[in-house]
Length: 401
Image (cartoon, rainbow, N blue to C red; front, side, top):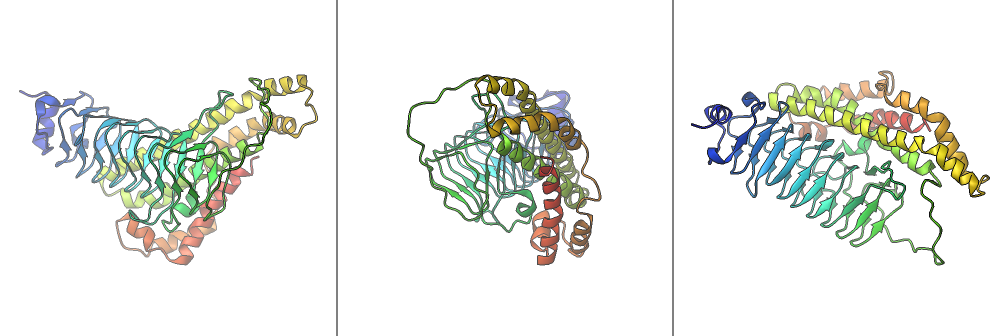
């Protein structure tokens, strides 16, 4: 006789070719696993928050562990470990994936084999190659599965500094325009890397083999390597930060985009996902991921702010009192308590209210339950109003600095 949980799933119509080779934890709720879901040999399901929608396939290439994840319709996780993440309709991952909390893959976002993600947000259609580590990043761009933003194989996002801080989240594209699914894709060539925190615009191309270290917020750019200055090596002193204004601004911009997407889910996504129990679980999971991401970014920015007093003291000992970067550090040191208080509050309902109203009026005339088709049916005026609404949320967050 199979374990009670496995028997309950079989009775619901879940397809388990080798029931004796599948593990279902006692806390898994069978009613949250849709009939027709296929669990291949070696699958493990854990956690009360786990929800798996119709048409999902787990473990087609290698064993899969799913721990407190939410999967929409037609999600395929082919092999690996997935914990505390949310996958919307049509998302998929190849063998050897290692996906940790704070990860949200929207519709048809996907990766090939051996991809590591944590605190990662991929908007629809974003595609990752193989052998990739892309934690602490947001990526948008593209219009469909053929015209999608791409990260080439063997790519890495460098998210930890010699000063041992992680205020390093990078943004490829943005939320206010990216959610409209009409922006040109971004291309990050294989065997390359991105040193966070960076912001790169839509339609930009980073050639293969290049380590990119700067902001390039303009659209449609072919990014070329910047020659390193010649000369002798410079002294490095642990604890001494230099220019931080760009770091703070990029972190606030990233937080502003997360806050904007949280509002987008509340006003735009929820009505389209509330009628389907599997999609509703994904809606709740996505909102939880966004809150987790925001908490992480606030935490990392606070850690940076907390290091400013020591950095300032050490900088003065080095005789650099008059340098501009000390003034930047003093500013962060003194303004952080106010910034933190605002960042932990909900977005005011009045922020972008008129633009939001105009957008939702147009949205209300579209009669489809498909999120992708709803966005594609938006009028140019609605797109403009929606982008303006979300951009006001982003800008208000940046203005805290």
